[in-house]
Image 1: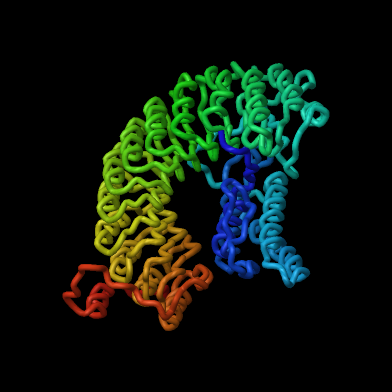
Image 2: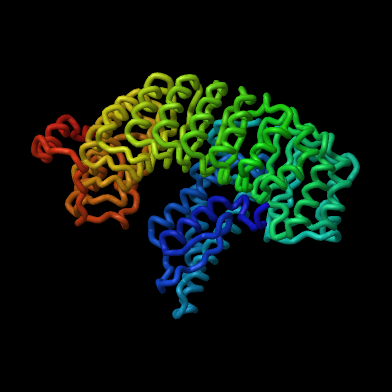
Length: 572
């Protein structure tokens, strides 16, 4: 069982942004934590770049406007209100951290970075608990369980992280002991229970377990010694045994196999689960096997999330067995789980039984081409797919082409497609373009960190130019694009009525090319405001030629020929 760390639950947006901030500034983030350790060289870590600040705003906006246990109690924010709050929070926290930095002129800025993340998280939680102030209709999530008027949530996760002992537990949980209470959903996250507190909580939970439908005990033993943490888990497991739950979240508890088996009595009694979250739990091969063995039935499961574990190929085999027994899955997340080719193939084949799947997230694994091809065969069996996240899977051209050729026929209704970081170059651009032409419902397309260059950009941009009226976001950053490619993407989106952001950062676009992009956006239906940050663009950089490829004709002449018909249609 791994060491218990205090990962910042509920504050995932701020923590992830803080982690990215650390990477950009030369820091390393501890797994599951927003704490940073400086590298050996000296460097100023403050202030963050504009792109980092914008990324934090985007992540907060998404979390504030996404269905959660808070939104079920306090209401869900519309996208516009969420964005306004996120921008306000970031500005306040940046100013506070900046003032802190100015008082320590000789410091490296690491304390300012930590304050920035901490305060952002705190204010975000305040907004979540305040709920919406506007009457805007929220965007309907892919997987949603309507809130019943009689449902009541008991939630002690707000405020500062704290260790809970017996006396405080009695006070915190007193509402659950009142006769006739109607609590059906409980959240004990962000509170670290010791043995004394668990012994208080156990009888209380046992007395109300017949009325409970949702239990969130994620991140509830942080910082406790292993033996104590395991005992706490066993107490909670025994108390909740037999509760007929539709939702169970045991994430962020560094479970490992020992932790999973500590929940044996609870897990074995669950045959009606609809949502199960086991994220950031150190789920190894043995832990995955234990989960597969202990849960008697996953036939009703609609949501299964395994993000950020150490499952590997061997563990993936046991997850695949669970997936095979879950024909009603609508949302499956198995990202950042160290799964390679063999595990990827097994998982892809198992997903073929989940014909109701709407959201599939397999990002940040080591699938490779073979698993990519296996996945393409499964995708043809998923007619309801709406969101597909396949970034950082080492798909290369062959795996990418296999997948997009299937999606072209089976998933024209797709709204989100992410395929960043897959070593995709211009050779796959035609197949990708044909697929995108068919996807007229697309709202977000991410092709960042590939090798499209201008040749691939011209072809793909052309496919997006006509239709795609719902497209909101296009990310083609870090693709070795130069002036021509950047101009093509600007032309493709400039008249989209719903468009919000074009990311062409991290490329090799000349100053003249940037000016042309801005002119195209100014003269189209959208303004230059949709253009993302350009702080990592290198106007003097040059795209390297692919090894082994011969130039059969002048590159500029070839691109000019492809550019015919790509001029912006301006409104009268």
